[in-house]
Image 1 (cartoon, rainbow, N blue to C red):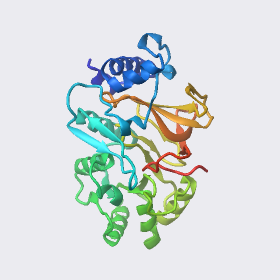
Image 2 (cartoon, rainbow, N blue to C red):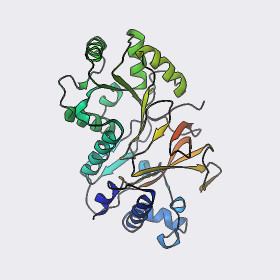
Image 3 (cartoon, rainbow, N blue to C red):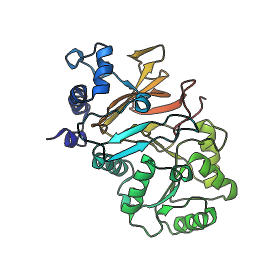
Length: 326
């Protein structure tokens, strides 16, 4: 079975570790940027016996280098939003079907068949630029839902509010996914008492509003939409997988993704559960780039395999997944 197929057929921690070691060896041998990074740390596949000891490439390399573990040219390039004057990250995609398999399988695993949902998207900032991996994903989910009213709604709040109330009253399953500032703008103008709708926030304020800690954001949104919990999506340009939360900011990963936290004072040291540190991610869907990434996010992991995002390192760039430390 090819590595690509192995990644999406993982059913246990043992299988995850086996595939992860194979991916590490493949990327060490085929990704020049990652190989150079490992060489600087004197880390070779023969030296690695635990997943925690695999070198995690700083996410900033996606801004300064072309991170590819393949000889072919990319057929797609995703880019981060960034802010005016900043250098954006670029994720060079060799095989877009891997990304499609990743988000389709993850959505099904967390929420069931996409065909059961009307997908309503409120992502104005992402639609205003090219190269958004989030727009790519949501657009495909909209098409696969095959529901009449699935689509992007930008700033036409009145139409969206009327549709949302009608669909919810009919008992139809609805997913409204929106960037945080747009959801806040929406509930400032309209209020709801929704019973059959999932509200999912993704991204931050994109410079449009003052940043809020997740707890405060969710308090406002639960009241405005009349729901008990707010769901969240955790993803980024440099990843081809997403983690999801069905409430309280606690995320779970699909079976081909895993989270660690590193010591802020010693980047090579992995912390135990319940300790705040930098978020390290193994995303095996990043087969043709780099699957081992040290992000600029701060968070905690827990024994039940959930994790939470608490903020970002000081002086790191403002990005879509930015949240202030509580």
